[in-house]
Length: 135
Length: 417
Image (tube, rainbow over all chains, first blue to last red; front, side, top):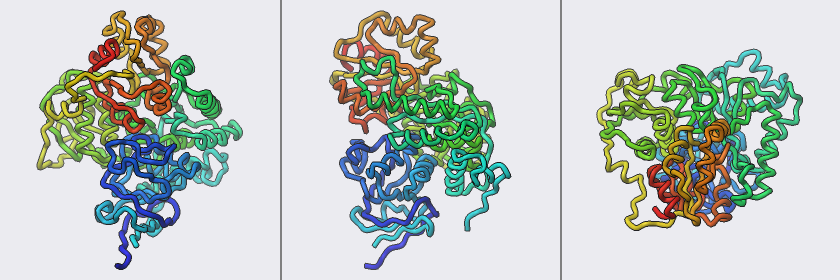
């Protein structure tokens, strides 16, 4: 099978490659994560119990709450952050947080990206070119 | 091709570092976000509200604040009035709830740095009720989802969600990128709901916000509500908006006949024709409430998120009516330092404390290292009248239950809900 390339809007951060962790669910660092242990801790989240550290998180959109904009920096500093956030759509909080933490983030696909990529796959995110490649 | 971002002479100088590192860092942050969302210039803002609890900041965030604060006063001082969101610790009671000295030290360090930047430590998420409410059309940089949705919807002010780094950047530069809810074109309704009930309690209003938030569920959606809402109060809209923003990440709503950009249906929709209008009734709200048939022991009852107004606290004191709370249950009430002082003056604090409850100043429960609080105090089951708190707190290991103010107080007294 050849690589699949998905176009998106130009994003923030550097080009990264990693293992995808995918769900048709939303994201907030405060609402959903145990940031000490590096796992999804919200029982109702589709990724409950999963480790997100070093993964390329592929999710639907941002949840309410403003805390993520500080939290992403602290997660990066403690090496307990995802490698990138790949979202169908985002809100200002995650973009502000990604800019502050220099964490890779893209959004704005022509398709529902959570339906196109499977967990465990190798994914490259290029925020400058505005593409995501699933190998 | 990226659109050109137009900078004024002063903005260019900030970007070049001619007004010091703090302003250079700040405008770089704002520029990145602005370009991401397709903005082409900045809009001046009159005030900033900065979210900066130390659980969110973490050691890295605190070090960043200290680095900014280490610069010359002329370079580091904010350029517009700037206030703070709730903090993680009330120093008057932190030992009672077994909060650690390590966290206390973080709070002291962050406070010292924020004060050095010229920020006013109001420590409140209800700045629109207690500090300086914005007016119609005023561009602001607010940093709590509840304060943003209230400012946008109830006052007709203009703000995006400005998280801590962005709020701080706005305070240092006096501007934000012009996109999203600063643009008239982005403020029309995108979803229409017919509400077939008039919420009776604050928790009902929160539940309604939760229902609408779940159905919209995106920052770029603006719900329009039509129904018989007659005689709404500030606290009702506070709970509704806070829940809507929490469940849906929504920063603006219109309520026909209530909010200023929805004096009639056509004004709020930009005369867009909706094909469908979901109907919201009592059954929708019941789904948000705690549904267990058997009584459950309640470890902690929390009134917070948003912080309580003077009227809300007076109401809790009235319901308590001098009764003692159960020895196995804690009752916490969070408000701003200004409202706490008013409660002290009116002897409401004394009434509350006689019951064994605690009136917290300058904090909000979920910003108080809630996971560590639960472990230190053996809290698991939590009752609240705040749909927003119910939505947030399960990720911290709690089992939350939404109930009315009266039910919550009775749960604190009996130890059961």
